Length: 199
Image (cartoon, rainbow, N blue to C red; front, top):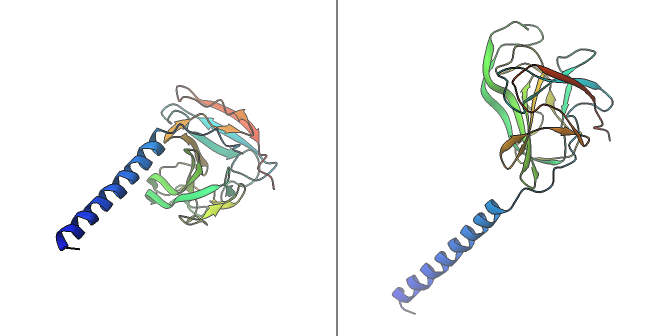
């Protein structure tokens, strides 16, 4: 086989491979999201937490605060099984800690985690106290600990900022099949939910 013929065959094979990859990406992009996973509150089983928002917070953004006990360092859990796609620092951490709760505020989400749950669904967990206890690429099950509740990033007090996303867009969060009621940030709103994120 001549060198010219070999180059032609290789070129055809490369074009076919690239065409197949392009078709796969297009089909995946056009595929509609799957059904909503059975998300649970990202906190310990049986605990009651206040879910809230306020003007300027962002549509569908949920802030979670425990209704009793210490806030700093509470376990933050996976709301559903999936694969960790981000785990690290978003923005600038700031200096707010349990020993320095009024320290300088940072920017962005601070220590954070993003989980891909499949079917074009994902969840975000922001303002963790310390580096996440999970790593990118790690498989987690519902209830696995991702980190501890803190106030890193653009946060004025310890809490968990949580989002559910469908096909990359924020949507209303559901927990144990119930709506959170947080859909916009036109006014202050809060509601209590008890976690069913149980083994």
